[in-house]
Length: 352
Image 1 (cartoon, helix red, strand yellow):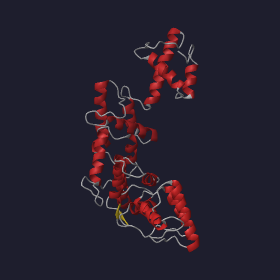
Image 2 (image 1 turned 90 degrees about the horizontal axis):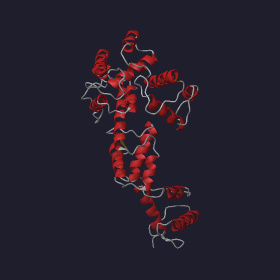
Image 3 (image 1 turned 30 degrees about the vertical axis):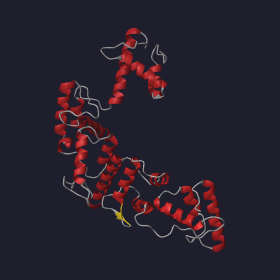
Image 4 (image 1 turned 180 degrees about the vertical axis):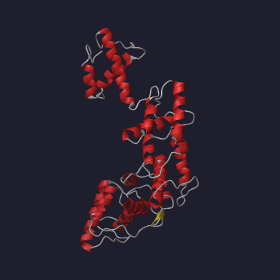
């Protein structure tokens, strides 16, 4: 009679195995062996089967591996554990789960195997032990889109390791079976459309030889588009994700500010930008200062920093700005310096 897979009976079977090992000196139990009132051979075989299938509880795995002389039997090619062990070997060698297409270890196509695990997870087809084992791997991510991004970055990094730069990558460049050139082209298209997240923008820009393309990198083209944006909107301070006339002008402006902070923007270019109406080098700080200046003007006119919610100063929505500062202070998001500058104004009150 086989042992039910419940904790008490499992522990009874484990105790029987420990006793068997202490008396016989081995954990190799024949399939038909019955000992101490338990079908021990069948139980041991079942544990090994479940281990290789990736469904044996990890606490049970640890308990069995603590038994002197325990082993899981010979490797089982094609099993879930065989795939996981191959991936673990790759992680040990590379330090990451970013697997390039065509990577084969111990006969396992790792990219295909990893993709299948993410699809199985989405379809609720993985066991709890399988989920725990995969989630414990460095940089593992269940999201397929994130995995595709990681795959692209891994390919780009591998190319750089061999060629030292991405400047040599063209639209039709492939790395093994991976279309690296096409992937980088899609990244540039997403960037121009303003849909590439800031962290991914930064990750690409950190790669040697990376370029967003001629139009983005051109100073003249960017300045032309910014001036056109100024003509249409009345200011030269587009939000970061702004795309204007097909150009990611928001990002272009962000890069110019970064160059200015780093001291790499030529003086003549900095002067051209600073002369544009509405240009700001530090827009977040400048916007706050603009609000404080308006409030100071209000105090000089009315004697106290007590504007109503709908009050304006020379067209500036001062009441709304003041309400925002008080809300930020209440939530703990207002810096001590800013809070002190507001509190120093005559008549200022945190409570409305």
